[in-house]
Length: 298
Ligand SMILES: Nc1ncnc2c1ncn2[C@@H]1O[C@H](COP(=O)(O)OP(=O)(O)O)[C@@H](O)[C@H]1O
Ligand SMILES: [Mg+2]
Image (cartoon, rainbow, N blue to C red; front, side, top):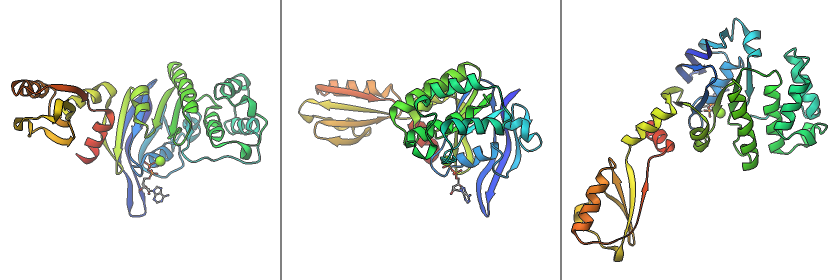
């Protein structure tokens, strides 16, 4: 069984097609990164999974169809929405109890305590939500999504505009939940987060999937992207034979673009032949971000 099955999902807002035949599955227990620039369709897809959006196609959460088995599907799913949404007059604790009631969960006190502690909300349990700072509100949104201990957790840019401290503590908790078997789908534009946390990456652009593969495969593909090398020569000496690779010069510092890393050897031997001494050299291997940009613009 899959944690998530997204089959041929399309969505229009009037004439505008926000999702175009999105198709993927998420294995139970995996940690998936959904990457896309602003407007790619990430939130639209998540709203469809959460049953907030009408869509064409089929979506299942833990085997339950989100339309036909809506109650069971919802019990299996916790969504942290991109926009803050809360009742400003309830306290943190009341919010979590109320949310538990919505799911018909009663005996979850020890789990609530754990969530409250792990998200550092303990000091604020009796504060009304409107008096919380932005970061605290964000933590509450995460807590709210977890009250029923859902097997599938979706986070829509949970760390956008959030301080480093919260990001770190949030990820520690989410990683632990993943280790305990919860499936995680995360959208973020912090590529380092995806690089560090996720084992599968799905890239969407203009409502379409442009790449989906394991993180290891994506990083392997990076080997086919250009490597940039910066070489600083003594006195800014250079030889014309390197002009094919040269993309930029600033003083004594030359930036070369190599189609493969073995071209570096050619450059170094040409410099040696011309008797040019190297002061400094640095190599910039392609990152996940370069791969993403290559897919979007390439
Ligand atoms: N309620 C809506 N009505 C009309 N267009 C919308 C609506 N919600 C989103 N869109 C459009 O759909 C596209 C995808 O938006 P969204 O799913 O929010 O992208 P993302 O979360 O990847 O930034 C954008 O072009 C956005 O302007
Ligand atoms: Mg969004």
